[in-house]
Image (cartoon, rainbow, N blue to C red; front, side, top):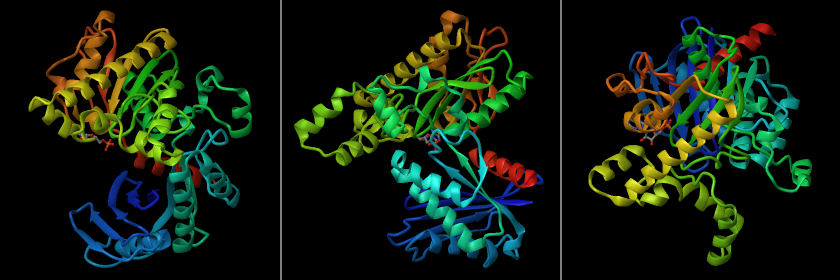
Length: 400
Ligand code: AMP
């Protein structure tokens, strides 16, 4: 059974075709600059690849390029679209309505569109992706949506409410939703497997998704009780280009001084802040690490701010959980940046956490990175959001 996984952004459409028999990626690619000019890059499991510029005025045109790449030319992987059993879509914002993945119906599409107020850049693009998939594959090919917010729906109100007038929650549903749920769900499920406690009972886990966008989730008995991202993926701690949480009055202060409108301020906080904003060097962690080696003090400051904010969050979550058994590192930085992992784990030295320096050199591979006598187990677990989307899609279509 082949499942096509789609991650539609406002001007991009990433895809993976996964054979669920062995859970292998058969082909994957990316359509970029949709609505601008257009470029598709495609590669197959056996190393065939191409990249070309091609007109893509909208997501429907991008989908046509995807199906063409899968069906024709030197990098084709299937003979007929009927070899795609179902399509799974990543959806950023599921609001309070969706606490799990669901099969796509018109009602679901309408809900995702309505929730666009809470994720304007993402949800509208997701709807375009779903509609384009229906056009390309027809209504009979089942489609499933997997929400980034769903896994965090177990948070209690005391964790998800903000201390602002209650009427804004009632009117606009302003609250913490949390993101990266698909990644946190994937790595924590794997962690529970490694612990031999697949049902999660009596476990307290802190899951650190550290990438260009970053978030941490605290899980008790396998369920999220709190997470760092909020109404949008801007909250939490310093990220590649996002500020993370700051004193809210800074926003109105800068808007007033610089004459920014809400959109311009949003841009500053989402695209010009974080590691990039502090260092003035780059949002990419490898550039920051290099700049620190070259003696750049602002890069050093950005790095230290991030480590400090992460440590504060983890300390808070340990208090909220009433202890901790395991800590997970995942995503681009979490899977590859041993020094940051070491700094974080060593901050827990007071609780008897001991890093295994040798094992902590691991990059991009699953590993236990604490010593056998450490009181908390540290793991690197590579995330795989696409595989989880494909698994949910398979489960839902078989269930239906
Ligand atoms: P992601 O958003 O999960 O793709 O993560 C992107 C971030 O991971 C960027 O800041 C990269 O610099 C960082 N990253 C990716 N690969 C490596 C690596 N091999 N070593 C250090 N950082 C990496």
